[in-house]
Amino acid sequence: MAINLQKGQTIDLRKNDKGESIYDLSQVTIGLGWDVRQKQGGFLGKIFGGKEEEYDLDAVAFLLDANGKVADLGRTAMVSGRNVALYGGDVIYFNSMRHPSGNIWLTGDNRTGAGDGDDEQIIVQLDKLDQKYQKILFVVTIYQGRKNNQHFGMVDNAFIRAVDSRGKEITKYSLSGDASMNGMCSMVFAEAYRHNGDWKFRALGEANQTDNFVDILAKYAYNK
Image (tube, rainbow, N blue to C red; front, side, top):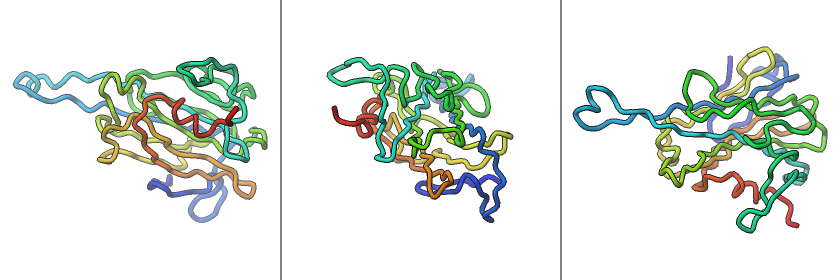
């Protein structure tokens, strides 16, 4: 049975709550899902229901070294006075969907949150990742959220979950109904990290007002 995590809670990805190794980590899917809250208001709104807005939530992953930093930003460009990762490095996002190692990738960019289940997925082959990678940070942002006056307080059923290679759900972390999400356009959802030879998963839920993951990445990049 999957564990429903609370903020700050940690589990061992290799073991269940009885300490048994029951998961196949040859490939782990980190799934992100959300629904857009239905608009309400007015006489016609009560009859026909509000129109559902499109929210473009993006899943991002940072691969961190033993110092907790992204060692390789890949090919970069200077944007607004800051080096921005483009592709080919240790940042996985919609413009750089597959890591050069081939061991972690983003399956696609869902721009509406429509449909059931995961809306975006990052797949990682944990057992094949080079030892130089000690942690993977999973981030989600609302694309142009500030411009469109969109934030996590307007999103329902937001979750992140980990599923093993056989489709068995290991853990799930939900953010629905959290008033502290109002005005927040990005979040460090969770992290997977090495500990004594095993991989652990921790729910973080660290919200930010920025809608640009580069602002978060700046904390994890080496100063050059």
